[in-house]
Length: 280
View (cartoon, rainbow, N blue to C red):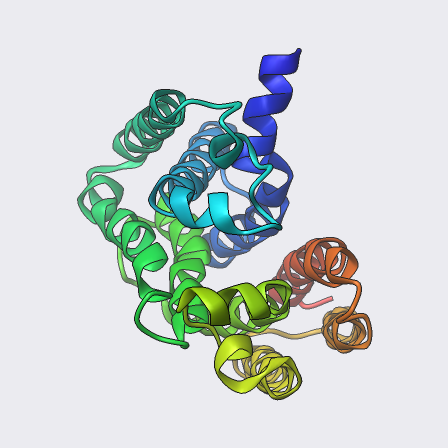
């Protein structure tokens, strides 16, 4: 049990809840209905494997930084409760799951599978050189609904609506990553790391976060106007807007703003897509 808790803490298993609604949303957009059980299972395995690999690489690349950061020094890898070889083992296992799932989905998915892997590995290095790494993390996140789309429809045909959802994902993720980064403003300044809070100060950075979330909401409005329909869809759109607004009312309660409200946003986006496709 202790080993399970250690590994669960290392990979932040609960954070997978951010991505799964977007994967399912992309799959719904692909053909207007839920995928078959086989595709659904493979798609979720690929999503979980990819996300776990991404987090492992982030932890491994940043382990020395995390050891010096008071907020992260007690995490399994920097604290020493998990060995580096164990972390690499989790990374390789999750990569294997991702690639096997992509292979079983289609040759198309396998051919594109290297793109998110490269993006994952690049991300931890960007905060060493630019304060805009939050946007790159958003770009990485934009691949989540695309992955769901390609799992069901292994081609670029009909990709328009899911591209809107991907752009939403860029601004949504970048916005709440800035909120999360306010926790490390002082440490980043002292360590020479780059983030918007360390470059601009938390107050100004949070204004940028609010702008990103406003843009994210605007993209969903456009998605509704061009491709979706139905009064219930509008209700879910308003719920998403309310949740994004509340996120900025609780910015000093980062666990609430970062985790709980964003899980709710992800679920609301899925319901928004499902209702909009069905026109209810």
